[in-house]
Length: 375
Image 1 (tube, rainbow, N blue to C red):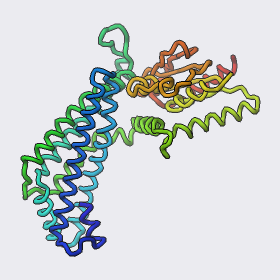
Image 2 (image 1 turned 180 degrees about the vertical axis):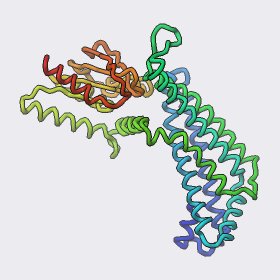
Image 3 (image 1 turned 180 degrees about the horizontal axis):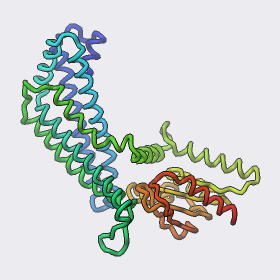
Image 4 (image 1 turned 90 degrees about the vertical axis):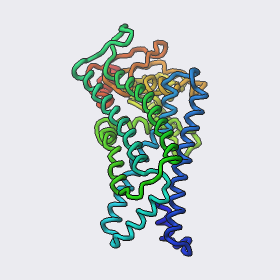
């Protein structure tokens, strides 16, 4: 419907009636939806065709997630914008009959049942959000009450951080199935379900906007760190010729800092956390004849990069060499990071028994640096 507003505001197609403009913009809106759904379906099918039983399941679900996760958030934002815009238009638009004319024309030209489609989409997304909340509750239960659980083969204890990561894997298997069924229902709705002329559009989009509620804690709560980490990962893995790629810039900054410290004859200890460890592992490893000591904390290089993205330093860089003097620490309740388990490269890999999830490593890193200085 944004097209109709733009056309009217710019005077484009001024010789056409409002009804024809609404017809055109509604058709463009529905066509855009259809093309998006088909593109996502075909992309998902191609990913499965190339990866099924050839690559680890974690990698497949992460590839699929890069398709549908942006769609989920954009759809929630779109429903909210729809609801707010229609509320303002119906309340402060002046002529109520004009809004009613628009509503009637919109439903007539939509060619599918708005209520059934929006409620189905909202229901699926709300369910995915509830599964996220269940995962958070399970993580908190294991972290504060249970302390650990047995693995399926009962050979080891699994702590809260790994529990959270495994739940993400479980959710990653469930969500695509739900969305695939939703896409089939959407295509079925386009073909067979007619629009109801008495549908209250504002009411439909208002209820549909409720799909965003389960995701609010992931955006504004302490778990928002997950979005920060994912953003760092995406920008780091973009092709280096992309303007917003962070790979070259972050590496150059650390290299410059090391060179300045070396020029002043300082002993160098690189302390890094989270995404910074991915940068530091590469930079320190490429320092020839280096006496630089590296301490990493909360590193996602194994738990995220290797497990879900099949991305390793050696796989990304042919000439990569692991740092020679490298210590790694991690928390058992860290839902992003975990052990790296690279005995050939890491001198010491320690567990931090102080709870704190993925944040609050500054004090721990400071103590590690003090111990390095003492030795």
